[in-house]
Amino acid sequence: MIHPEYLQTVFLLEEGDQSEWTRPFAIVTAWNPNGIDTPANENEALDRRLVDELDGSAEISSHRLIWGCSRDFQHREASRLIWGLSLEKAIEIGRAYQQEAIFWVNKEGIRVHSCTCEAVEALEDFLVFDSPDHRGALED
Image 1 (cartoon, helix red, strand yellow):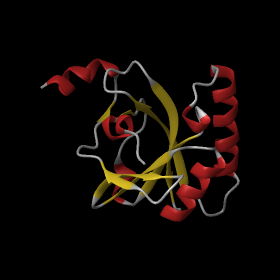
Image 2 (spheres, helix red, strand yellow):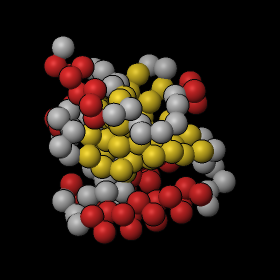
Image 3 (cartoon, one colour):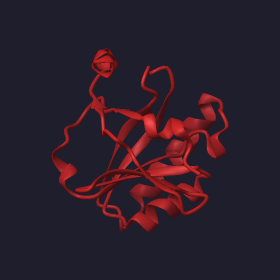
Image 4 (cartoon, helix red, strand yellow):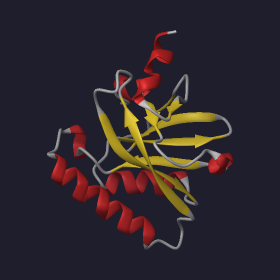
């Protein structure tokens, strides 16, 4: 099952650009394993471990920080845009970090893939902001 909240996710890209976004990529987080709120220091350690794993992988061509956020920006999780891996590998990484789901982006759009079952759902919109100050756009 895909949690309904995941289908409302928006993304915050604080630096960088979207020029690489013509190739398929995954968005994966290591934060809050099993959907359980985890202390900040543990989440940061999990994220560092994920970055180290991505940096050490010959399969990964590049990765970058992006924040997965609730639409009111009150909840956000550090996540990684990851290029150069298959959907199956992205789900495998999500499972390794005890995640409930990962996002997969390609020319067809953005989909949420469960890491615990075969469920897949499309996001209606792939919204990326460079500042939480743009949240007014969500109310239009």
